[in-house]
Figure (cartoon, rainbow, N blue to C red):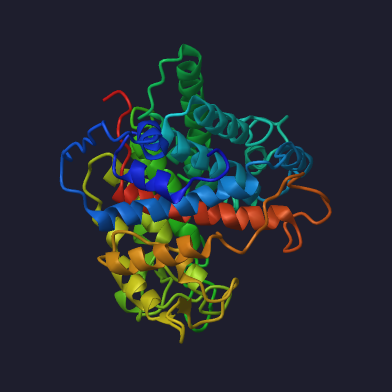
Length: 435
């Protein structure tokens, strides 16, 4: 069961039935003299919801099936040895942590919680993630030595830190009887709080929203909507995960400002610091890297930010809704069915034609989300088909972040887990384990 979660097991979990007892009942011989007692369900079971939850969990569990026997120490060594490397290198570690935490939520197996904590702690270590000190070699530490703050020095570190914060938010619903595990969860919470403070504080200055202020249109074609959205994602998660921290209100205010500046059309005539500001076409079309690529043409990042409010039982602020539906509606025009009935993108992309990567929640398009999640679960792979990796994740450091490396594939696979996690938490929020 550790390396493959059966369909039956996932169905039992999604039904809220005790897995071990049900498995024993299913496999134990039945004597003629023994009556078969079928307890009445406490509530009516929505089989469509059961299937949907099962498929979401099954897709995320593919990360564990693929990398459950992988040597991640090679990745840690690689991160330490490449201080100028991408923050994306931490994504596979975060994805594994979330995968094991999902297993723990399903089966309450202490070993899965230990593995989840091991991975989260690895991602948050000072010599992996960085503590902002001059002695650290990691990507966050570089920021402390750069003045003035500039976009090129902190590329993608903010969403990676938010991925960690999502782990903390989930762990707050876990209350193990084991005092040692409880202490580790508390220490991790504090550690990620420190990381979040550094990440969020660095985004309070005037360098955000990102320049150029007019981007993503026909003439420019390199939208800054993605950058503004992922900074908003980080700031909002920091403010909602650590609301008692001194700068939490500043983080939220800045995060909502950046959200409002993520999807801005020319016909809004928006001005910022006395300059015209826009990031997308009037139609909702987003041009990034001078092409219309579905990877950059959807509102996934702002829905990630909105999730922080949803999980805290708060209304989603209007800034996080600005032009989101317009962008999503345009994105949906790129999603079509081919001759075999599979959902594909009708625009160039890498990988080609796979809208099942993005089960974007909260857009009033739940049937489509269920359909593409079903497709991805049936496919049985995340980003690209990947055989289980049983050795080192980083075999040849010279390959680094390249299509030929295990690392590159694991990063992309870890991002799909990220997107599916958002949908999973949106539709099936955590339940406090003490209840």
